[in-house]
Length: 255
Image 1 (cartoon, helix red, strand yellow):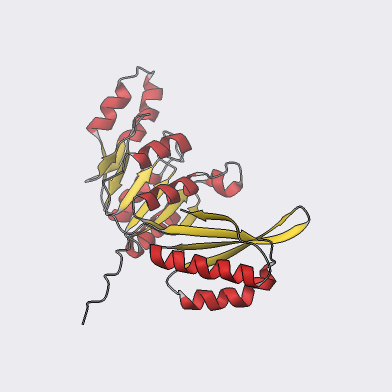
Image 2: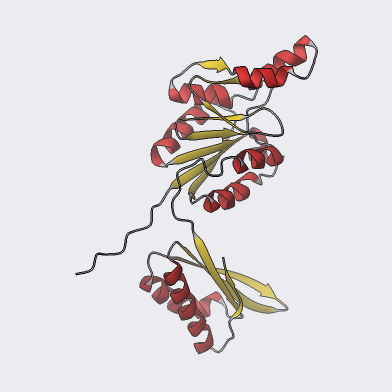
């Protein structure tokens, strides 16, 4: 009897976006989209995302809940020089350790002369939880990581550099791949048959996304999973369904 095929390793993550400015609508978050795509390249599947205000108890409780549930937690925001940048303090409390000044970050910050009050504010960015490691940042002060929690800047360009620097440094699992096809069919026309196809491949996510174009209704059908052969088989089944319903499969994509 042949052995059953090995199941792909799944590595999971949550993204925690910290900042009143996100919740107020003043700032539009773009970090989640970048992180979800980048982490999938690294073989890490983002399973949850939360946004919390700059309130210590909420940050601490959320970090502790997420780090117990997922392989990794990636936070963005709240590591700047102002009074409301409290992420480092909160991560230290979540892990029950003291905040210490990182000599590497302090030396980097001190390279640029500044008046004492400016330097004092700037040095807030040198504080990290005791025992934490650093996340490279070619644009300025590093982020840090402790346990399975990775703490990064909220400024998109800086966060992206930090995330990029983690390539090859994290536990890797199976990347999620995708297939998609579009048809000028309403969701109501495909609903029953889509359910049957989903039942045949329960390990692959099948989603439908309606649109209206040139006064016509249509649906884009997206399949996501780690099983490439299963994705191709599901795509074939979805395409055959489209033809059987009198439409033409369009814009087939594999990713």
